[in-house]
Length: 250
Image 1 (cartoon, rainbow, N blue to C red):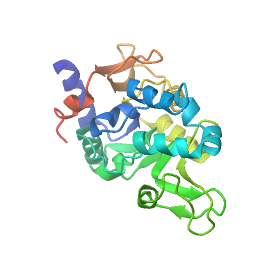
Image 2 (image 1 turned 90 degrees about the vertical axis):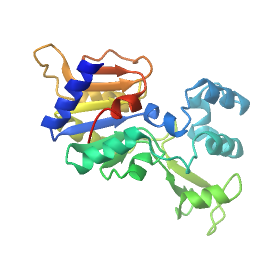
Image 3 (image 1 turned 60 degrees about the vertical axis):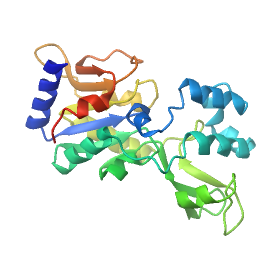
Image 4 (image 1 turned 180 degrees about the vertical axis):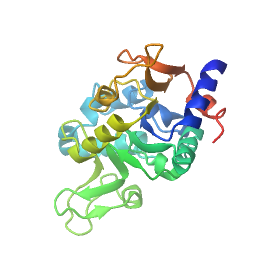
């Protein structure tokens, strides 16, 4: 661990071209539920699904809107969550000119709360919501303070969170920006993701394939669980990433 920390610190010292990919694991310490956790699976079954793909799908949203929102507000809609030390350190690294961009699979807005500005939210945000008929936009406060199923105050139609559900098309503009960032990065930090969710996991294939003298790529991984695909990472911190970032002075 100490040797890996020394290398991590030296990388941060020498580079100004880090790109970060984050997943659910960076936010669990903030109280955000990992929707693939055992608790989430129990909740999914309570609402008639077998997997997260069942509940967080466009089809389920349209046919079981009330149940969708009951699950969504309990498991994903946490506007009171505060950034973790990992979010805060990343924001400081961005401010110091070290990070070129953060690509997140999360919808919780914690990177922005921590102060990060260069964030690509691949799957959208709980803070953005749209009427499915007239397109009027609503903030998170409106969603949280209205009925289980929030309705548009202009036309009365259902409001949908601006998050990418299973069955929705990915925002190709965001993906293009993410791919460009990754292709041009010197170091790629992959934090809190098992690399099981596509297309985010495919971004590693865009990263420079050049290997250093030890045969590794300039990829730094921090994750509690096992990875869904093998990665020739330069550094792999398995465990609580907050313990790592506490030891990195920014």
